[in-house]
Length: 424
Image 1 (cartoon, rainbow, N blue to C red):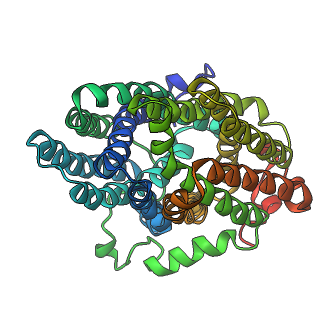
Image 2: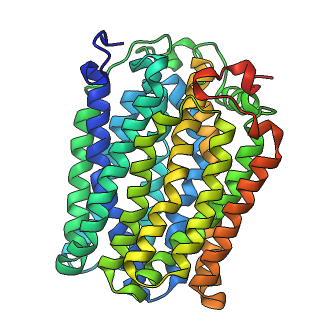
Image 3: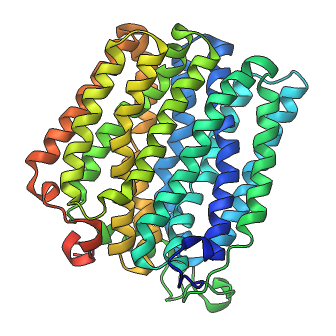
């Protein structure tokens, strides 16, 4: 780890490069997401197709668990570099086709899952490299800053991209995204770590399929899943899966809601409100690191459910966007603390696999929600669908309150593998 004697993460060169790379890639991703979802809706005029697009964007997240054993074996900073280069090449195809005036909804839908599939290696690699760059007592702060990099760029670029899209079209946004992938690859290339698993030995030369201990890919995958089976986080994972189903449905109907409120720029404003809520939640997370995590969970989802219901009830873009922002600030706090608990409590050799497994389990229902939400909106309407999601958030909050295993979870600063039941 780099010297942090002054107490500042910014003196840590590796973390600084990781943070800057995250800024670059998220700036492009924000523009890409707005362009892709709005363009699908614009080309088809149907929330059903935006639901399909949401499924194709989020669906590969279910497979993130498969990336865990790779991340825990190979140098994570190298995985970050190659992922950026491959994603940049795919987005460049969309940019070139758009510039030639040949971009179709079918090509767009075909490319979406490949870009997202490569992305599934990025988050586990980032979470695996972070504990090797910073001390345990700085993990919450470091995670908060990385989430800040993501949500901060989302706020600026999602709002701005809606306007740019309406003025100059999708091609410029795709060109911008491709360029940011290349920039991020250069920055990630400067992130170097030293660990027992981070060497230049080719597994094929040692006879290992993927592990330096002779274990196969399947063995390491099963070990990672078994490590969290029976832990106190399992009830939360099941509840989060249900909540993510509602998030998928909401994503599918936001373009239609934006169109009803104005235009592509209104859609960008709604997406920016969601990003801003994550931004504020990330910045605020450090305030709650000494608060019992179970208490944070109960409050977070009860507040979110009530606020989302209010966002649907009010009229006008300002009121809707404002309450939508308020609805997901608590969820942003909850998520930062959740992954900080994992990174702090899990054994180092399991961090990549546990992070990937948790991400897959909690994300599994999001793409299904996108499909169902896009189809259901045509039957029950956007407002009814969003009220249903608000009810789901409230139900999860009540569930956290009733379940003693979740309600009594300790603060992040006190969590360890034994307390959470990891490996049991």
